Image (tube, rainbow, N blue to C red; front, side, top):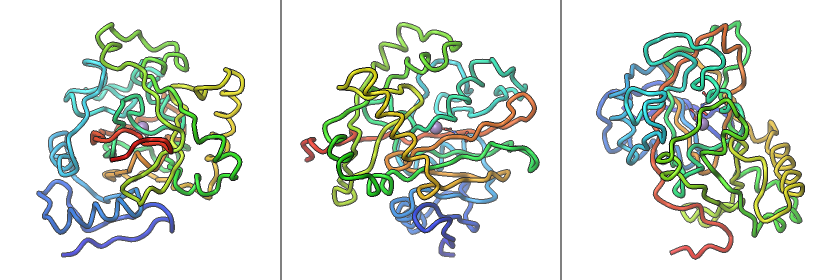
Length: 298
Ligand code: OGA
Ligand code: MN
């Protein structure tokens, strides 16, 4: 049976009901999914039955999985990240637990693994425990950076052209000082990287998007601290605009999948001590650097 989908907004996202991600995927379906991802950047597969192993299997259709940089922190399986305020054993964690602090950091606009030289391609997030209907927050919100770039004033596009941002895994600690220090090895494995603010997409006829984050740094490189901070805040404000949004309201057993090259995302904060929220994430490794307006693209 062909995949049946409905659009979520005209610019971003589709919802699919008649698909089982726990089964082996045939080639036609896989091609259809890849086509939908390229066109709409986000898919929600409803009513899935997944565990760590079957999520990993499904992810492998799209490439290699990333492993999380810190050892033995939030996961049983090195390729699965527990996006949760409960431990892998099901214990509701204290608000100050580093695993919960990392969840809070997810409420700042970001794209996954931007601290890597090859940032993540897709992320796949499966909702194992979602918030009750009466709770506020907990939605995952996306902002479409292809659209945002198109809407930028021309003088800002010019200004952004040569600029880069520094992305550093270690720098999450500047925003969340209670997080424990990384080990020397972890720091060595993840040195800071820079990426251009304007991303050029060779797979979309060189279309451009904005590419920046606010979960590790709140500055822009190549400018004074003050000027960089001002520009960064301006950008955060600019992309925080409903015109560019897709807001995912979670239902139990949703599997969502998004393209980190073109969408930023964040979780809307919720009451972390009152409610349990547990998801597992597999992340597809990127294989290309972030190309900018001055990159040599072969
Ligand atoms: C993530 C993330 C948002 C959420 O897993 O990368 O940012 O809604 N999650 O938990
Ligand atoms: Mn994320």
